[in-house]
Length: 381
Image 1 (cartoon, one colour):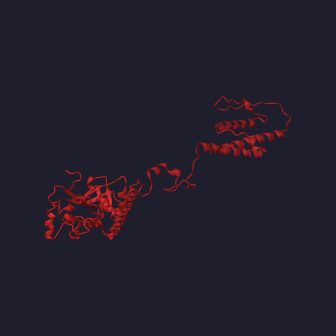
Image 2 (image 1 turned 90 degrees about the horizontal axis):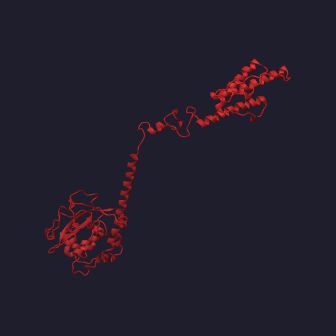
Image 3 (image 1 turned 135 degrees about the vertical axis):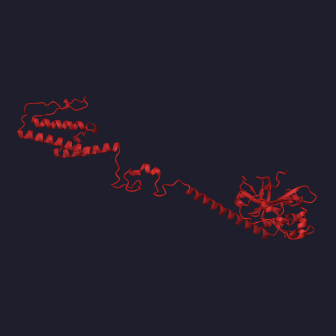
C-alpha cells in the first residue's frame, strides 16, 4: 500500500461545504469517458470526508489561513493503461486544491510547480507548500479558481478524471495540446486577484470563529467559577471568618473599613495593657494636679502589682484612721510573699507639728489613696 494512499471512512463534514463534489453528470459521453479512469468512489465522494491536522513549526499555513487542519473530500483515479493510482484532494471549506498529483500524472518534473508559481506574480502568496505532517497532504495547495484555471492549461489528457472536482464545464475549458498556450501554465491576473481577495475573506472568517471560540471559552470559565450562596451571596469562608467585624456585623456585608458603634473592635493583649497604662497615667495626673507636683515624680505601678497596691492603700487608710501619728515604711513590706502584708506601724515622738498640720497631712494621704483607688477601679471596669 502506498504511504500517501487515500483513506476512505464514512463520517460527517465539519464546517460549511462551499466546494461540493460534482457527482451527477447528465452528459452520457462524459459519464462514459469518466468510467475509463476508474474513479472511486464516484457518486459517493461526499460520504467520506477526511480531517487532516497540520501544525508546522514555521506556522506559515496558520498565518495565511488561520487554520491548523484540512477538511477534505477526496477520490482516486487511474490513467488508462497505467497501474498507478492518483489521489485528488481539496478542502471543502475554503477550496484549497492539492495540485501535486496533476503534475505527477502528466509526467512533469518536481521543479515544475515552483516554476509555475514564478511565472504568475502574486500566485505564490495565496498558495501553500506543505512539507510536513501527513504524507497525503504534502505538496502544493492552490485556491480553487486558480487551480481550475491552471489545470486547464496542461491537464487535457486527464480532463474527465477531474470533472468530479472542477465540474462538467472543465472539459471545454482545457487547452488542446495543439494550442500554442498549452503547457505554458500562465493564468489570468484577474483570477489571481480574486483568489487573493477570497483568501483574505476566508482568513477573516477563521479569525472571527477563533474570537468567538475564545469568548465562549471565557464565558464558560466564568460560569464555572465557584460562587457563593445563590440566595445571599455568602461563602462558607466569609461566614467562618466573619470579616473584620466579627460576630457583631449589622448586616450580611461588611468591608475592611466599615465599622459602626454596633460593631466594636476589641483590643488585643498588647493594646489592652497600653490602655490600662494610659488610664493609670491619667489618674496620676489628676493626683498631681491636687498636690501641685509634676507627674514625672510619680512612678506608675505595673498591672501585675495593681492588687497589691490596693491592699496597701486600704491598710494605710485603716491604720491612719486608728492612729494620727501613723507613718508607713515601704521597706518593711515583705516582697518575697505572694501577698502583701500590712506593714508594722511605728510610733515616734512628736516632731513639733501642730494639730492642724497633722490633720492636713493625714487628709492629703487619704486623698492620694482615694485617687489611686479610683484610677484602679476604672481599669478593672
